[in-house]
Structures are given as structure tokens and as C-alpha cells.
Length: 165
Figure 1 (cartoon, rainbow, N blue to C red):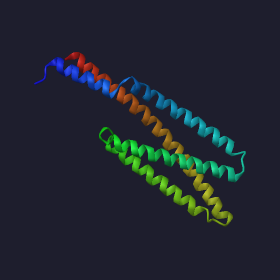
Figure 2 (cartoon, helix red, strand yellow):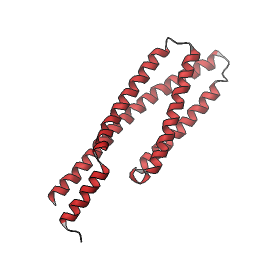
Figure 3 (cartoon, rainbow, N blue to C red):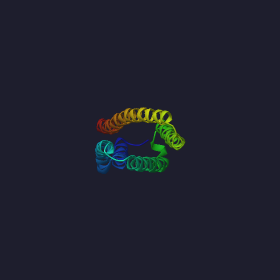
Figure 4 (cartoon, rainbow, N blue to C red):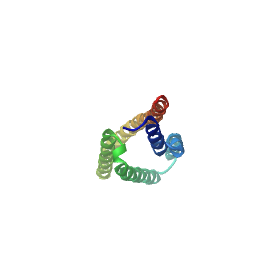
């Protein structure tokens, strides 16, 4: 059986491995990146109202490609860290990939709309999707904040346990 000192040293090393200074900064910086990205999206949406439809569609395609690239990168990263990521996050990630594929298929199908009524329905659906995506993103940001705070709390709990042993 390990001595109290050995356990403290073991847990101290795990602490350094699991939540080092760069990890502390990553949590805070990640939330900052979310804020900056939301501001960029807000600015692009405001600008879009004064642009021609083709330019707006190009921007939408670029944003969709960026979202897909981010999802792909997240998938690779999560795959490497699967042991340290809860199953619910893996399921959420798969659900998001499925959602992106469905939205892409819907968009391609809508391009065949010829009449005004069909185009109006597509616009209403797109507006509903946009509002839902914003609401979803808001919730994800709140969850990201909670996850960062949970990670800090868990690390502090380990520190307290080490101190009491």
C-alpha cells in the first residue's frame, strides 16, 4: 500500500499533467474565442443585409464549410481524447455532424425551388433554423462555461484532498 507521501506525490504529478498552466489559460481563452466568434457572426449578419444575395450565399457557404471543418477537427481531437471525454459529448458530436449533413441536404434541395411560394417557405424555414441554431449555441456556450468551471472545481477538490492526507 502506498504511503500518504507517495499518494500526495502521485496526485501532485497527475495535477500537473491534467491541469497545468496552459490548461488553465485554455479554459479562459476558449471562452474568449467563443465571445470573439459570436461577435464576428453578429457583424457578418448585420453586413449581409446590405449585400447582394449571391454575396450573402457565398458567405453562408463559407460559414457552413468552416462549421464542417471545425466539426471534423473536433471529431479528430475527441477521437484522440475519447478516454477523457464523456460519452454524452461523443453522442452530441455525432448528432451535430448529422445535423450539418441534413442542413446541407436541405439547402441543396431548396435550390430547385422555382416559385415564389416555395422560396418564401424556404426563407421562413431558414429563419427558424437560424433562431434555433442561435438558441442552441447559447446553450452550448453556457455548457462550455459550466464545463470549464466543473474542471476547475474538480481540480480544486483534488488539491483539497491532497492537503488533508
